[in-house]
Image 1 (spheres, rainbow, N blue to C red):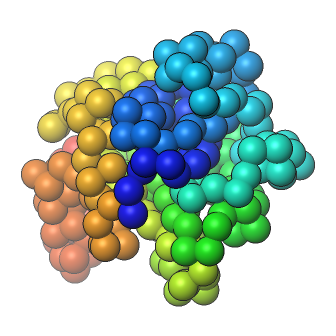
Image 2: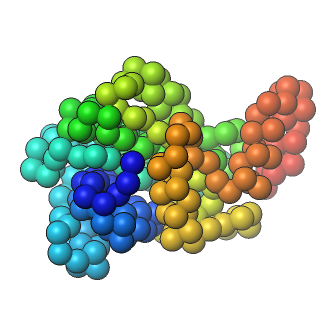
Length: 243
């Protein structure tokens, strides 16, 4: 697939990786629709993209708002959902309301987007869901964010089989990317990338044939290896990261 002439809906496009993807796809000739909860932030992105692009306020926890945006701007060649909430810290110290909001936005929100996108993608169109390197193994300080992203991985695997060939479901598994979410971290983030670098890797991956776009390798593969070890080995290793 090539971006020229494509219509791409980026949900969570008002900041971070979403904005970087919007700019990268626009430069390749795609028509972009960016969605998020704040009209002013979306308008600022569209102003940078230039003519031919649009903003549509939508909240992933509100299926009606997603349907409204899709009906107004679809059908689409790709739907990409980067919207997420993050709140690092020990699981049992998590604020109850924040934890519920994370599950609602990250996991239920992805479910809502998938249901909407399946109706508004052109045949053979692409649905890209965002997991995380944090989903590969339950590390300390991952809080419920990691659990929500692990759920998305399982969800994407199911959808890949259920919706093919009408919808080309992909999973994006990024490591640390410098955004307002990771700005909350108070620990060293190995192999951290800028949003523009992450976006370039995602574009290449989504134009390829692999189900998963995972990067950077020097972070992803050690976590995959940790997940492959028996718990008698992996859990003591993970405990060394406890602060």
